[in-house]
Image 1 (cartoon, one colour):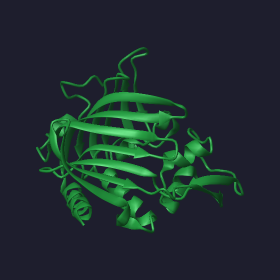
Image 2 (tube, rainbow, N blue to C red; image 1 turned 180 degrees about the vertical axis):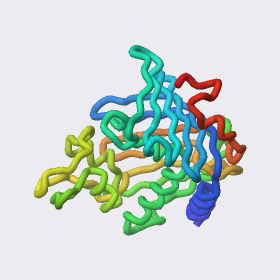
Image 3 (cartoon, helix red, strand yellow; image 1 turned 90 degrees about the horizontal axis):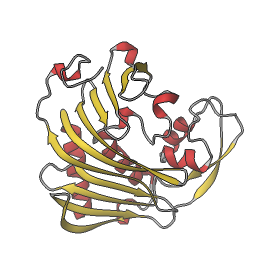
Image 4 (cartoon, rainbow, N blue to C red; image 1 turned 90 degrees about the vertical axis):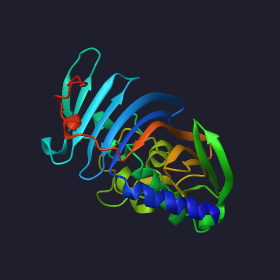
Amino acid sequence: MKALKVLQQMNDSIKAIKWVRAHIASLERVETTFKTSNSEIKLQTHPRRLYFKNATQKIEVLYNWGVLNNKALVKINSFPYVTLQLDPTGNLMRKNQHYTIHELGFEFVGESIARAISKDKDGLTNFKYHGKVLKNGYNCHLIEYENKNYAYVDYTVGEKETAGSIASKLVVNEYLLRYKNELLNDYGYLKKGMILKVPTLFCKKATLFVDDKMLVPVVVSLSDDIGIFENYEFSKIEIDKPIKGEEFSRNYKDYNF
């Protein structure tokens, strides 16, 4: 019941957020290797406006919903030093990425936990509350989820289905579906009748550190049958400190667009 209460409070807190500033240290498994990055985000949730800077890859991204036909400005601050307008869900921006820029922030975390619960017939009985611990300077609730019945089953591709649409329909993790079927960079329609191996659950194990005051996740770690496939750690978190509109402009003084 304690785990349920914290998860409900976290979900309510995430839904109420208007602005977010944070740094993110990410670790994502891509095939058999791990990719790490350190980024910063500025986010307005409604309408969605986003500035993202990946210090590791020296890339800046600016996105404003309803502007540039909903394309993102992408600045590559290394050779060839160009600024591009790209579809956030297209191949170039999604290549070797677990998620799109639309999933940046805390909303997607809350949705993922809800999906894990809805997909698991045993639901909240697989969540365990381990009390409060100090994590990355934050006083956090530690919650773990695990279901040992995690497995893969066959799925037959229907008319005009993509890996993403199938993952959404079956409420499973899109990266795991892509990885299992060697579709990591295939974003188009799949061949009708194709047999895929799809996970029965969103993940096998999840570990959450939820800040006691802000009630947002500080660390999110997800595992499958192999081990950890993604881990995100948030720091320098600022919730609902208004962000000026000019900070979502390509001409803002700190940006290089």
